[in-house]
Image 1 (cartoon, helix red, strand yellow):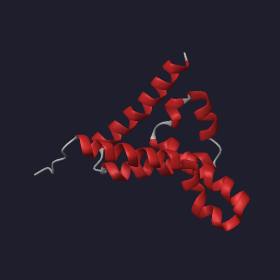
Image 2 (tube, one colour):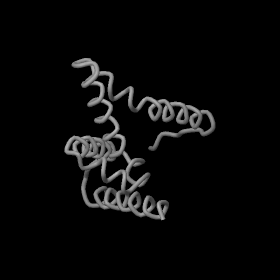
Image 3 (cartoon, helix red, strand yellow):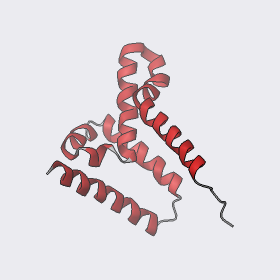
Length: 118
């Protein structure tokens, strides 16, 4: 049942974003920034954490989950290190995801031949 719930919640988030992309002139990069900021905002309001516990990977995998992870890392680092936590908390909390994205995108660039659109 957890898998089904995660699939449905993640799919609903993707469907809402697809509708936003189809019906507005927002560029994909801006939509990605909106998702990260929305996750951080909902995390700061204390809404995203209970939602992600209920929805599981359906809420933590999309970019809004990344924004929440950034916020949580910054919050913990500020409590521990003070002002410096603003700069290192987010990167510390999300370093494995960032490193994975870099490594796998590098491997993909070696396997595939990217071409520029005309």
